[in-house]
Image 1 (cartoon, one colour):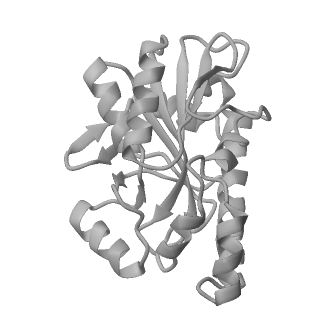
Image 2 (cartoon, rainbow, N blue to C red):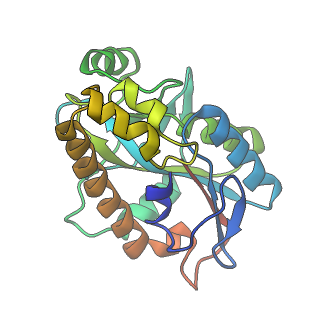
Image 3 (cartoon, rainbow, N blue to C red):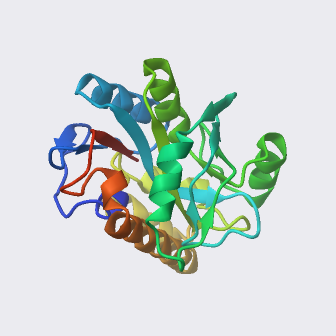
Amino acid sequence: MRMEARCVTPLRLPFNRMVSLGESAAIWLCGMGEEPAREAAEGLRTGGATALMSFGLAGALIPSLRPGDLVLPESIYAGRSLQVDLGWRARLQQQLPPHLGVVGGILATSREVVTSATEKRALAQLTGACAVDMESGAVAETAAQAGMPFLAVRAISDPAGFSPPSILLGAIRRDGSADLTRLLPLLLRGSVTLATLLHLAMGSRAACSTLSAVMRYANREMGTSKHAAGTRRMSEE
């Protein structure tokens, strides 16, 4: 989403297109969901990527995770287990400051937005995952099919006991930005409360602060350092 992209670059990115971030990295703003992420990953691969990274927000599936916690999973669950490049993961984690709370384990991918604590508990029990997103599975599958290294970098935006209400989805544009012409009527009718929006905003802000810190401290492994080796490619929601 655009809020995630701003953690990577101040550029106003075009939607659904590969944009170079220098000699060693490129980014693709794809929006939410499995199919957009798959299209982005394929586009990056054909554009010359030698590695793929899924970068953005995630929802907590376990109570111990809080907004702003960083999830660097060892595997992705998308109907089957997909591995990340553990060497790349370790190198990135070594560059991070101690104050960032880093969690490993399994990151689950869901085809639908998980909109209740009950759904989160069920997904955690089914998969053993600590967090969920909608894109990492598609990016991991593309990387696996191409024999490319893959890494997921995800920051928690909503805790296990709170989720974005499903009615909000109709007020979100394809790039993840809010459509005020659809959001305001929801507020006026009481379908969504201001408290809910503030809760979501605070969680997203904490997550984006963490993602910005990852970019600041681990830019070499993100591919944005002047001295970075290889070609890292990032798929944003």
